[in-house]
Length: 380
Ligand code: MRU
Image (cartoon, rainbow, N blue to C red; front, side, top):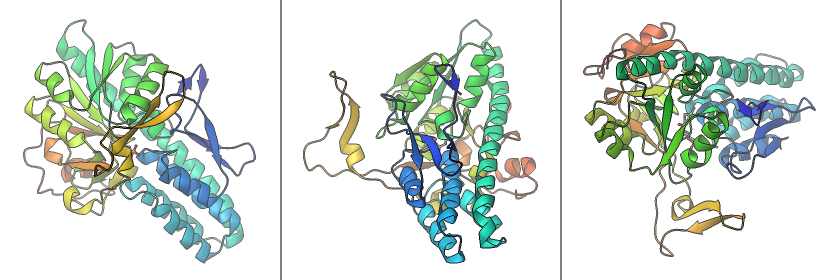
């Protein structure tokens, strides 16, 4: 997407053909700064410290992280160590594991001398495939926004609520949940986005608001607890979020607070869509609650918040009494029964094993005990 008229991706190969350049998301929205990972450990740190974040993007960085590691040492044991180091950075998003398996599986078949180049090539392909998948998600989601606009039957804009940042910053380009919104805006449809602030790290207030503002998409930041109130008053036409891991039966695991939005949407009959590239599907599991590991992060992210002081300095301020215990669960699971439909690069489907199986016959399963009661994806 464009920043001040120039097209950017979130990650790219630097001019030396070896280092991995990226937009440092810990500096946004107050500064637009790029950085470089030159070693495996710098790539792992960038993921762990959330300088790059969002499920598809950390998969891309993990792929490049392996390439950097193989440039240092291309032996089998170094490859195993690099996979373990990168896999340990963040536990929930399955794209990370998927990218590591993909690249490691490919290079293991090659002699060590050819491994680094092959890993760089494959990492580049993974980035290009993510861009294509997200753009296709945008097209499929655009059709849903068009339907919502048609249903309203007025000149009013379509109000979409989103949680966290599932925009282009969370992917290589376009985003998942935001791709349909960019497509709708670019197509001249009237859209407005309710942006959940997304405490504790404020991915909505800091990143989604920045992205939408740069693209000129009308939006309003709301506190995390406001969505239900707006839905009760008919001020949300649909919700679209991303996901960090989707089970083969359609449960999704996304940023903490997504589940509460899905509950409110269900109670108010507001369509709740989840957008994802298929690299976010974990085909080995069905029950999100039982089987997805939930990352727990430093409680300091809850007890403090970061912002720009009136003097321009970016500072962290404490918001709780000194010594207050805090817990920082980074993700929650939304059961498939609360999801109107999944928006993938191959089209829109029910959040169920049947739905996913029909779109991905090469990967999906044929029956889902959790599918009963799922809403019709086209006519929710
Ligand atoms: O902890 P984060 O900021 O990496 O969490 C990101 C999300 O929860 C996104 O919604 C998810 O990765 C889907 S983004 C395309």
